[in-house]
Length: 197
Image 1 (cartoon, rainbow, N blue to C red):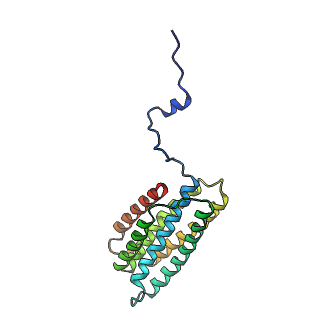
Image 2: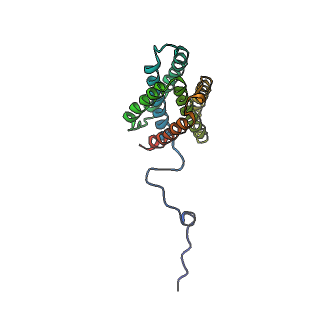
Image 3: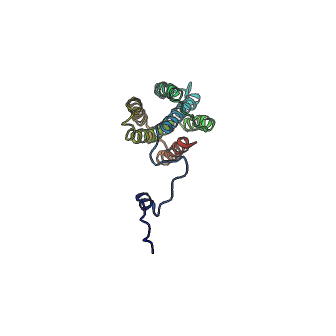
């Protein structure tokens, strides 16, 4: 009678775990990082465009509009860099770009309609999630110093945007905590979808 076959190490460690779906990995690859960051910077630009469409020319909003324009200019710079990276590294952009075009502008416009502080709540929430997202990517980019440096640089801008939004009263908007949590949940979902689709 033959002895039972020994299980391989792979079989032993995989026991009881479902295999990952095809094309999905627990560790993000550089292409998915660039794809999601490109989508995120595009979404940020659209949020600021929506906010500016509502707040520009509104009496008493000059200070908030100036801050939003400064942040928007930096996001445009980030988007231009990720546009270049998508082309240089031949990364497929997200297929959800039309969704983010509409969703970003709508989110910016709706929060601005609720007032300057609500617009700043939106900015603070989005930038908090982006800060977390970029920080998590840095852990996987030791082998790609150029991309790591870009993300470190952009992360500093996102932290500054969050701090500026807080200085403009983001936490003082009516319902700011609930609004912030809803926006953060939406951003985290958008990140997961854009990494894959």
